[in-house]
Length: 107
Image (tube, rainbow, N blue to C red; front, side, top):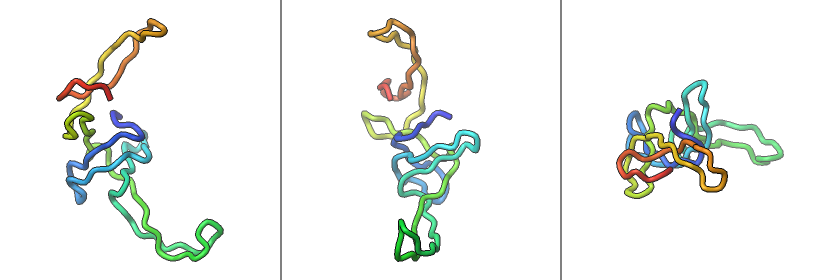
């Protein structure tokens, strides 16, 4: 799975096409993600200590990870992701970083 928590993404297909948001949670085994403000579902809840009044609560539901695309940090446009191996300055070890395909910017 190429997207991670806290990444800014845009929905590229489905009912929420064109909406952007931050990834709140990732489910790699199911290949699904929860995006902030996308795929809201209403749930009727009973009163409890966290929600003393109860009522109807709106909550984000997971969508398929193939329906989202990462946003380029430079141009704020959808971009594909590549990998680049760089040498760490402090330790001198090689490490892999995610790179935007359009601008070459590190993510």
